[in-house]
Image: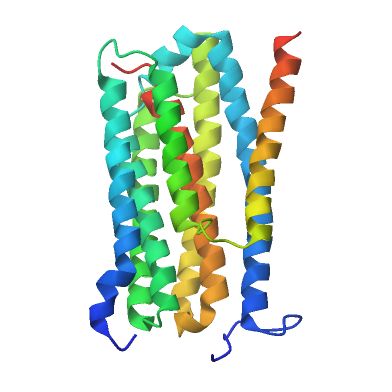
Length: 204
Length: 94
């Protein structure tokens, strides 16, 4: 087996390095899960305090754009997972194409999110608007905080995809590719929970 | 990869998983939009848990992962549950 281009001290071989990258990334993801968990707890408290007002505010979010963005993130996850498997199988060009697809899907997510934010601002769906009930204002605070922090994570993921695209011979960069894919899947999982909390509550 | 015919075999699992996830997305939206459907928040949360489990087991390769990675993922979920539990006990008992 040819050594990976990433192989460096202190790892004696690529398998040990790959395991260490995965372990380190999982520890980082665990800290990220706790970070986002605090925001979900904030949401839970608001739902407990003012369920009617929360449903009323959540029903005003853009379900079409939110749903499309969910689909884009899921497909980006599938693309980067495909790249991982293609690189493992030695398909250099196909692996790069899959990373490019993931990057374009992430870019499309950010474009749609920007469009949605502009609609939200135009409609006054921001915290602290005069006359807005306190609980609804708190919902929009959570909405902007959670989706904003998530969008920052998407931007970081996009930068990591671009970094992968600039690398040659992806099959020899498997540890970096796997670590990036793990990060992206967590970004996807966070949105999987944000979507029903922020977009599906109060519908129907 | 020398053999192009092997590409569909390599891509089958991620593509099938994506189709399952998109189907679950459609199901959760459809249920949320149904008038007077019962337990909507719980159904939406349940489908989200299933979707996240699919991503973790297939895309993040938790199925067949090494013990240390499985332990890290399990501890992360346990810490999250502990944080929610303790914070909720604190809040609800004030």
